[in-house]
Image (cartoon, rainbow over the protein chains, first blue to last red):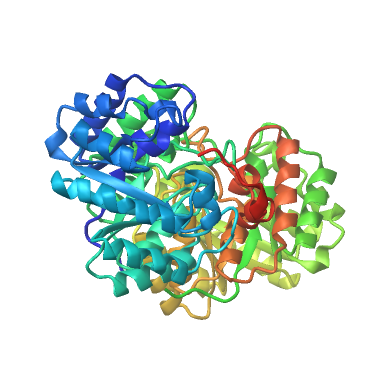
Length: 314
Length: 314
C-alpha cells in the first residue's frame, strides 16, 4: 500500500458548506473562521463564490469576507466563479486565485449553469485572459467526475475531453469532484491512475462528499494512485440537494485525524481543526457529521483514561 | 490496487448492535430479523451472546431467539460465549458454532472479563473440548487488536502471542477486532499482511467500528492485504461506551453497497439489506448511522431522476 508523505487539505467549508446553510453567517464570522483555519495550518481555502447574489444569498458577501481576512498572504485563497462577470468581481475584490467549474455531465451542467459543458468551457477564455492580465492564478474543477445523478456513470473518456480543453487553455490545476457522493474506491483509483499518469504536469485535487460513507475509502484509493490534495469542509458541512439529511463534504478534521494516524503530514493542527468545527456547529445551530466532534481523536480516548481508572461497564 | 472477487459479510447486529440498545426487542422480532438477513443472503450471523442474563439483559433470550429462527441450516449462526458456563448453555441451545473472545489488552480484558488475557485463554480449553465432543465449531476473536482505550497502541507482537495460543488450541477461524473504532488503514494493512502471510491456514475476519469514520477505509486496506471477511451490523447499530452518540459498527448495508459498486460479490441483496436496516430503525426507535438509510444507493439516485426531469436548484 502506497501513500504520500505529505497531503494538502483544502478547506472548502466557507463555500461548499455554508452555501447550503439556512442560517447566513455574518461576513466577519466567516472571515474569522478563515483566519482560524489559516492559523490551524490550512494552506488552501475556498473563500466563497462570485455567483449572482440572488442565486446563493449565503455567499453574496464573498468580496466583503475576503476583505476582512487578516492573514490573506499566508494561504492560497481561492474563489469559485461561474462566469466572466464573476471573474471581474473576483479580481476587483482582490482575489489572487479563481476556480472555474464545469460539470462533465451535460444534464448536470444544464441544470446548474443553464448551458452545455462546451459552452461553459468556451466562456472560460475571457475569464482566463482577464485573470492573466491581473496576475491572478486559475484552477479548474470538474463536477460529477465520479457519477451524475441524471446520467449515471461518467467515463474516463468523458472527463478526458474536458481535461484536454482545460489544459489547452493553460489551466494546470484541476479537481476531480464527486459532487453528489457517488464515487467508489475502484472508480476513484482507476480514474486517478489514468489522469495522474497522462497529465503529470497537472496539479490534481480530489473533492469527495461522504453522502454514502465512502469518502475516506476514496481518499485512501486516490492516495494509492499518487494523489495528495483533497478538499474537506469543517464539520462535514454541505449536503447534497438529492439526499436531505445525508452527509455532505467529508469533514476536514476527520481527514486530518486519519492521515495523522497514518503518519502522513498535513501541516494542520488537529486540535485547532476540531475547535473550528465546534465553532462552526455553534454558528449553524445544528449537529454536524464530524466524527471528531462526536467521538474525539483516538489519542484523546487513550489519554483521558489512564490504566488505573478503568471500568467501562461491559 | 488489489481486492478479492468475493467477500463474506457477517451480520453481528443481533449481538454487537442490540446489546447496546435501551429498548429490548422481543425474541420473535430478533429471530425474524435474522431470518430476513438469511433471506437477504447473509451467510454468517452472530445471533447473540451467552453471557450472564443480568450482565446484558438485551441478550438474555439468545437461546430462545436461536430456537425461533426458521432457516437455521441456511447460514453459519454463531454465538459469543464469555466462559465455560456460556459454552454449556450455547451447546444446550443447539448452536453449531461458538465464538470465544479475549482482549489483547490486559487492562481491557480485566475491565471486561475481570481476568488477565492468559487466564481467559486458559479457560477456553474446557469450552473447546465440550464443543468438539458435541460437533460444535469454534471461532476466536481478539478485541482491541487495533488499539485499546486504556493502553493505546497494540503491537503485532502482542496480537501474535494470542494468535499462537488460539492456533495451538486448534482454533483456525480468528477475528481481529477494532472494538472501539481506533483502527487506521495503515495499521490495518500492516497487521493484515503480517497475519495473513504468517497464518495462511487461518480463516481471518475483520471487525471494524466506524466511530472515527475510518471503517470503510479500513475495509479497503484489509482487502488489499487479502482479507475477505468483515463484520457489519444492520443500520450501523452498536456504539462505543466511551463515545456516546458516536457511530457504532459499520453498517452492513453500507459495506454491501460499496462492494457492489466495486464489482465485489457479497451474495447479499442490497435492497433487502436496506429494508432490514429500515425495520431495525423502527424497532429501536431512533435514527441510525446508515448512509443507505439516509441517502440511498447511488443507483437509486440515478434511476429516480431521468434526464427529462432535472432542476436540482444549484
